[in-house]
Image 1 (cartoon, helix red, strand yellow):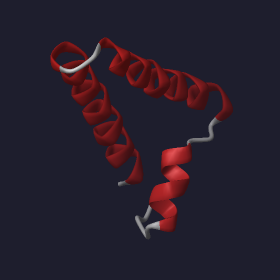
Image 2: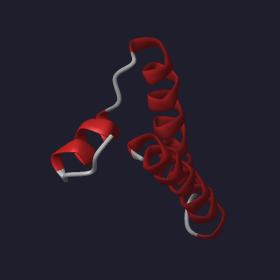
Image 3: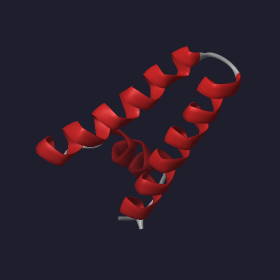
Image 4: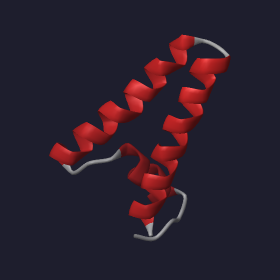
Length: 61
């Protein structure tokens, strides 16, 4: 359950930041890069900050 939520949150963050970069300011693309970098790093380290946050919020694995 938590992995599906992480993918949904990451995808939402990316789509929202792209829309914000188009309509508000291009600097929102830095947020897109941050999300992508975190996804990339979690594939190597098997650690994800969003997973820890969701666990503290009570979302079961």
